Image (cartoon, rainbow, N blue to C red; front, side, top):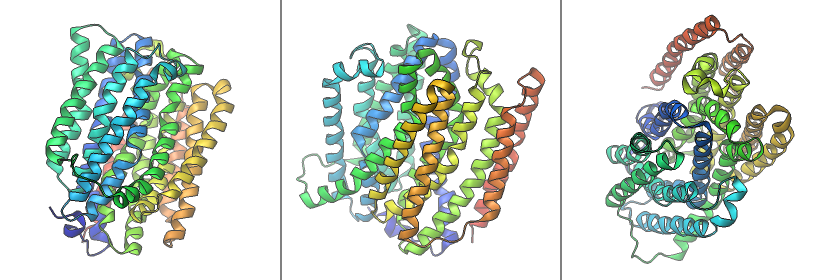
Length: 481
């Protein structure tokens, strides 16, 4: 099996960027299936489950994300990079096997210690929802590792099958179980266990990890040297984006975490899309041998992402009053600060785009330590700002802490990136357009939330899809030969 580096050598910047916004975006779309499914399922669950059950489920999802970070710990991206460099795939299959065993070992340790840590996060003991969440984690972590391997081989059909089964199968099975049984968080969560186990079986069949082969210590040591800083960086992203729900549950209660979850799901659409895009682009960027060309492609792609994000932030913010009422019943009080949360969370996509661009350069040159430094700075600032604002501002304070922390992380990683490869001057037109659209989105937060105002804002939000897709088409056309 040839590696991507053997088969993908773009001749110029345009060809490389076309690949990112072409086939690379297809992978990003598949990665984002879980986003689309969660967006569709959230309003159903908010109406079907009691608000306390929905809040508990939101906290369980946040716990699953934390456990996934701890059990994978950067090895998924390491496997992608190593598979691109591995002509026959034998060494990377061995690394995949060791990574899966590592994830299962960590899951076992976490399960055995759950009676001590579960009450700290506001869960009622180590059984029930916590046990089911651990049942997600073991197969789910292995699936994530194998998806990185399959993507690096550029096996789109297999990648899509495993990814969609893992991400869409769980909510589908969960809703069927809720329809057939009790409207409880534990009932819904069992569907995720079943789907992840099916995806695990398919992944093992197609990746064939070498569990019985002997691993050379130098190979494993080199892989973990790259993976450990990536793991800390991923842990920081969890703290910035998901740990809020555990903090809100602990300090403000289950009702507030349910309200925060609804607003967060709407606002986080852009950030998750960027995360999936970053995952889809990494192995393709690694295939660009010349470092200056790679950095130019990354910067041009980042500028394009800024424009897409700007139009999307405006569209999501102006349409959020109606979206909030669709996603949740009136008992969630969507008029009480939730639009502000949507705006703040959506704006986090701007610094995240910069973080992703700098991180792409650093990861593809095997410099992952700066990512850990940026992560540490972001977590520290997040803790300080959230501690200062969560009591006076509630969930708005939690969202503000995330935005400020990501801005700091973007500055730190940019500093490291420009010392790895000299950058080009900032595109002032792109920054000006992005700033203007973000300012308009901010202004829309203060507009009334009456019936006619909301109807007009929904229409405007739909119309903003036109410039969004026109911008995307222009990016693809301009990157073509």
